[in-house]
Amino acid sequence: MIAIALVGLVAQSAAAQDAKTVLANASRALGADSLTSITYYGSGANFNLGQSNNSNGAWPRVNLSDFRRSIDFRAPASRATGVTFTIPIQGGPAVQGLFQQNVTPANTAWAQHLEIWTTPWGFVKGAAVNNATSRVQTVGGTRYNVVTWVTPQKAPSGVAYRVVGYINAQTNLVDRVDTWVENPIFGDLQVETYYTQYREAEKGLMFPSTIVQRRAGWPTFEAQLLSAVANPANIQELLTPPPAPAGGPGGAAAAPQAPPALTSEKLAEGVYRIGGGYNALAVEFADHIFLWEGGAQNEARAQAVFAEAKRLIPNKPIKYAAISHHHFDHTSGLPATVAEGAVIVMHQVNKAFFERALGAPRTLAPDAISRSGKKAIIEGIGDKRVFQDATRTVELHLLKGLPHADGMLVAYLPKEKVLAYADTYNAPVAGRTAPPIVAVEVMVANLERLGLDYERLVSVHAPNPDRPITKAEMLASLGR
Image 1: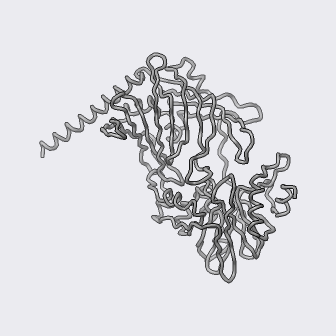
Image 2 (image 1 turned 180 degrees about the vertical axis):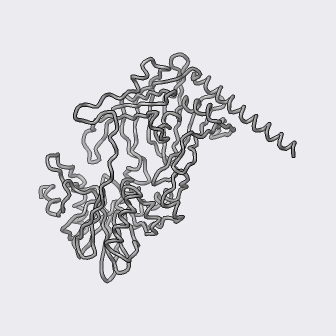
Image 3 (image 1 turned 90 degrees about the vertical axis):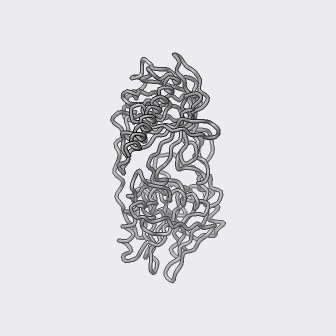
């Protein structure tokens, strides 16, 4: 037994020495031994997680020019800036905007600080002070020293975040860094960052000329770097956001606002609009409740909507909860829907995506799914699905040809002549430019093709000021 214990101690010591040696070699190869700060620049793209046009496709790309990221590893702090060019979903010329991301020592959230510690230089420095371990693995024919360490930051569950780097055994350069963050849809969401085509800058500093960060398998950030500067003399200036302009927003983030309180409006006997941020529709059947868009925004909002629906329609369970489409602002409350035990109804194009996402491990942040132990029950529908009993009829119909999202559904109550929808017609706000009409034209053409006889509309996004929307008002926006 003593001999076995001694062998174990020797093996642990060797493993620790291996990690130190691997990291020392990587730091030397990167030119990072005396690196305390860095700035690098080029161009690239951001991608909008959760807003894909098809749930099985890539996240939408927003081109990014004049990109620069500056990092002080001692603080630690980071600031990234750039100029964005976005193509409107309805078509037309690109719209220019500004991109900025500020990571400060006061904001210790791993979702932000990973932008420091998953860079090649940050990974090596973080691993050197966080008891890293090392192992050898061959991936795609390349031999890697795979180094793993855990962060001082803790996830909501209390566990530390894990960081895994793949250091090329031949070049000693960092080719890839993985970590995980919590996400309401994906649970433990893997963040993979790939570094390729290293070049040498001043003073022996090595930098990757190409960076690709992926989440849920698709890129969320790309950069083509032109160069990098080690220990820039003006690092504090590079990290400091400009002062806020008078009368407008600036570099500092606005204080978060409390979500609006829920309100209820009776549209017909047994039919209620539940407002508050996003609108939901609760419909009473003989022995259950049908809910439209109850899973939008977040878990807390979804739970509040469920409670309000049960208050309005007491002593009946929520059996069906339909979503309009897959975008995450409309689905981030689905963990609460799973825990409720309701059948989630969506277009069949989205079914496989949500089965995978909602069934993934959720160890970083306990949510309604992990607490309940339940699994998602999802019904994927085609062009039409009718829910009907002796008291009520609700029809779900597919809108075809929308540029915004594939699988977009509307809910139609034929007896009450009510149509519920999302992200197509947004009633104009007084004093502002009228909303684009492309989506409205497509929706109206679909409704006419389907022959739906509706008079009132319930938009998931409430008009401002909030008011009833009529068919006549929507048609008037098209000059009809």
